[in-house]
Amino acid sequence: MTDRIADVQAHETNSTRAVIKWLVVATMVALYLIIIPIVFADRLYVLRVLATASVLSLISLGVWLTFSIGRINLGQGGFALIGGYTTAILMTHWGISYWLALPASGILAALFGILLGLGILRLRGVYFAMITLSLTEAVRLAFLSGGSFTGGAPGIPVIPLPGPLSVLGLSIVPDFTRVNGHLAFYRLAAVLLILGFGVVWRISTSRVGWIFRSLQQNEDLSTSIGINITKYRVLAFGICCFYGGIGGSYFAAAQQSIYPAVFGVSDSVFFALYCFLGGLAYVVGPIVGAFVLFICFELLSANVAQEYQQFAYAAIMIAIMLWLPDGILSLRAPRWLVGRLRAGATAVDAAQRTTR
Image (cartoon, rainbow, N blue to C red; front, side):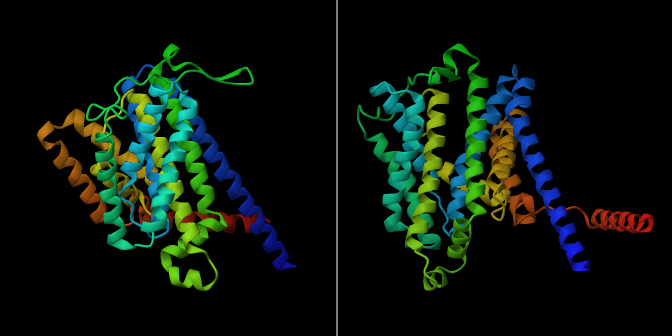
């Protein structure tokens, strides 16, 4: 009887925690999608910074997936460049709507990543990292040498803003040329980040996520129990490349231009750094890392002399990596505070037993 009561109480506790978790998630989504646009509707610079950090987080979430299978991906900038050029070419050369070019950019980047991944995902450690790092530069040089099709070094300078999106006669997204562009792009970035995070979180908590982590720990053992490691490695890398293509498409439309130097080797390194500094053990790690580092960079741009900006930024990153090797999210409450909270919880339990 006592065990049954304990099971019921444990079930009620888990249900309560689940409800609280979803309430917190719903509150954060409402804050990000509704409250922030209302509060900062006239603060265009703030909206631009938050939108940029959101899409950097989205791209970094893809890199986090490749980390989850034990691969260090330093080529995400190349796939973002593929996505950006795909959107630019589809919209300027063939007049295709942005709302079709956006998913097409992600799909093309994913297909390219899948074909490439069938060969290079056999490599591990520094070998895979160097191949992907070289890939970013190879993609940049390919678009640089694309002639009139890619625009060469100047790129494609005049990309139209996204038009309206209607489904069955119902207007879902307004014409970006007729509304506050900064606000519209912020909302687009917020929606992309929320959807992208939801997909990665669902993958990480599903059977596929467990398989990804098993590949990270021991691929030979995974093979011995019947897991098709090639299939799951390519799946993770394909999703990663899709996220890169979507992010590149967003930046091409937001900046209304694309050129080979938009994404380079340094950007690919930064996408990996966001994951490291946020915390590789946490799905939300890339988001925390991207927001903290990008906002720090913007603050330094405004408050530190230009010649010291890069030095201060590098010092912040090195300090975080030295004192928080497991990422920002590894921070814990001080021991004295934890002790007090536990003591308070014990006192509350004792008082409840007394009243019963």
